[in-house]
Image (cartoon, rainbow, N blue to C red; front, side, top):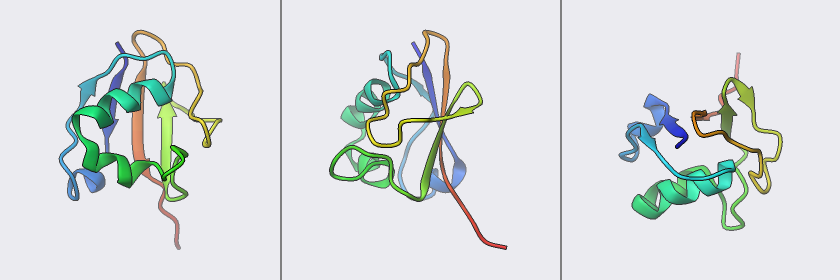
Length: 89
């Protein structure tokens, strides 16, 4: 199963430890995580299930292409990283 990681800045707001989650896409893996932790869902995706503008998801080091449906494929041993997309200077 893919492993889902959340950055420390997210963990300051809501409990979200590293965990494995079943799924063949980012959306499926995150749905499994959100089922166990519904509060986390509102931080990561909007009411349509699209990735929030201030969030970023990487799968095996590559940025997610489909931010709306999160349909990017994940493998059995994939590493999914969910983080805030920070900007500034």
